[in-house]
Image (tube, rainbow, N blue to C red; front, side):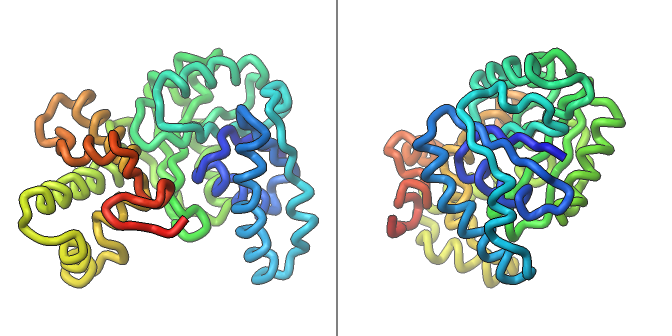
Length: 280
């Protein structure tokens, strides 16, 4: 099976690593707008694949030989699956999916890794809306077992079933979600993070104590503010804005401090500073 992944960010690299490890995938086309971004992301992929090969007994070089880099979108032709994992910007995703569908056969599945956007809205950018489905992987992809398979209004049952089958072949557990803002996890998780930011902004407790309270009191593996840094404060803000816009419910209004952090470039681990500081 030939699979194409679009995007060289953290999620794109993680999904590429999963595909290279799967015996069901013969060829992985990895597309990005620039070769330099692919070269940088390749270091993460090699590290993940090397770890997998060491633990499983597979040949590291043989797995990596499945990978084909390209900045030419036409190279995705012939793919059974095409998974979009570019930045969480609606217009960017719409434009890319519109172009993607010109190179894919009618029986190909187009999946988007969006964490909150409408699958229905994205699907109408393509020639085959019934073949568009959400496949929301979680970071880090090597550890997190869940994939939210999101059915838009146009998504066919056949498309949903093939997405669930792919998730299973990648060693993941799928949950089926009928399209709703934020799906399941982020609809609950991101407002919790937003409330943790509110607690910090009101000087109720320190960053470290807020994180410690949820780790020790709710048995969370990571505190909410550390988790915001892992996800990216910009992504958290984008999801809150989507929830607020789609529902009109004021409980989903992003805290002003979250907006300030994003404006200041305090994006979390990827920028070296968020609610915590990180070495780069």
